[in-house]
Image (cartoon, rainbow, N blue to C red; front, top):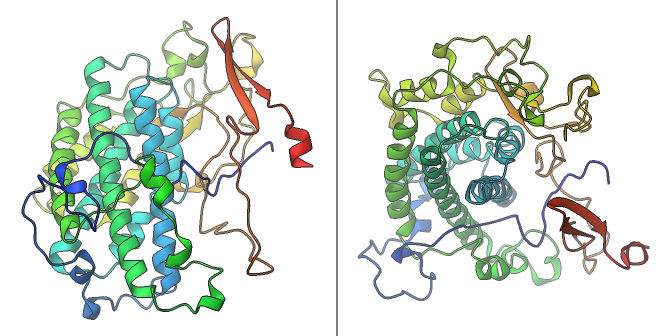
Length: 408
């Protein structure tokens, strides 16, 4: 298909990168070396009397609303894992997944978590994690703009550390919501109706085997979030320290690279903004604010502020003038979230790859099954329907043998 919208796949939906700390052992098997922790369960941290939330539409905590948060967090994990993987392998598409994060349902998980009823101790760490995620993804999008030319090894290393801990936080939040959803609804379905979203149909083992999901033991979620939040805020401060004016748009850095020619750089409304509108300066102001400390801010407020200072635009080959330029003359895809970005903000360039992540609010799910015994087959592209190979240093794709017969 010309414009695939990936809702989910057997891999790439829930993820984890890097090694875990000693508190990451399985919920049922306490591994050796784990630090002493409270034996209060993380589910018990979410008090029943605090589960009364806003009466506005879409906020009530029904089983489906908790599962909706799981879907949002799974999309966020996908984007974060791909940004981290791109930084590890020095690829050029990190800014594309930053755009996916902000344009799709990934960042909307913060709005749902903000309304999640928990006790004060847990809620504070959850909200801090959400605030830091917005600040970090704003910084990452700014520094990863375009093809990351001129980004020093030190900055790349700090970005990898930052995305690692942001990704780890996402896994903690995902497990927290999953455990709560499973415990609340384990007896709510009759066996005859197990054809929808119920704990019996949510098998996470394959994701655990590939280290893209992990179960925490009782009471560890608060401890993990606090440890990660401390690391994240330190790395963000390092990246924002002495925040320099925004790097010039790719289109103004000369003609040495085919990726340098992009629309908007010559006369774009965001290209001439001063340093006060720099994303790094905005993040730095939030972290150093004395009127409202960052750890007391609402995630929705910080997310909105970040969106006010970002404008994502695709790398394009202007007028088709350069036959060697890898970018198209116009973006061939309709993308989610374009209306969220400020048109007068600093431009963040991204490679115009096909959209990969969903907007669950616009296209929330597949059509309902016609029968309880009907299955849905979800296929990815790479190494399933198509095959990637390199020839003379150039990447190529080819159709795998038997693909047409299989689809027919």
